[in-house]
Image (tube, rainbow, N blue to C red; front, top):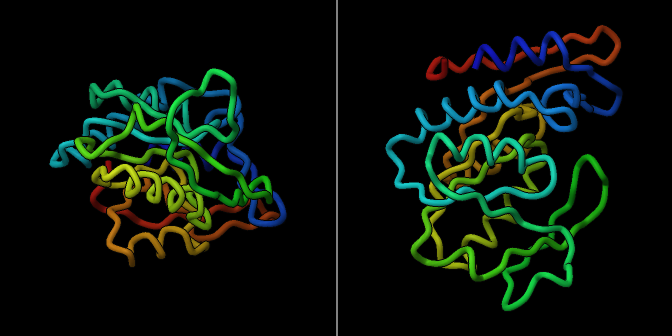
Length: 197
């Protein structure tokens, strides 16, 4: 998606260790007009899928998923990274290793909000090693729900997450795929995606 690529090229900061900082518009300060454009594009790309629920993970996926969900007219469920006193009843859970935070989280979703009747689109801000998405897929499988696909804002194409998911037969629609980045020069190389706007 050219709009997102242009924004990453303009405002993204490449740091050592394959870190791409996009916190000025994507995952700390949030540009909701941009999020709406992302949601519109995912709605176009997944127009053939009977999606009735969007699933994401806290925290940075929530904003994008909520704005995107408006284009689908469906609710958002987010996997929580910690148990709290206001969570009750049976839960689905999975372990997820965060690339950014270098730690393993137990994530949970209440069984009240995900079941066999659901056709689920996973939405997240980043795809690196794929652990978060794989954890969410485990939860979808445990619920007996149907995974319709995965919508990612920024995929690090030089890491294995996207490749692994696609080899599993998962439909992944990443709106910007970064194939290379250089911390010294700040250069970012994007993968050509002809089917996107």
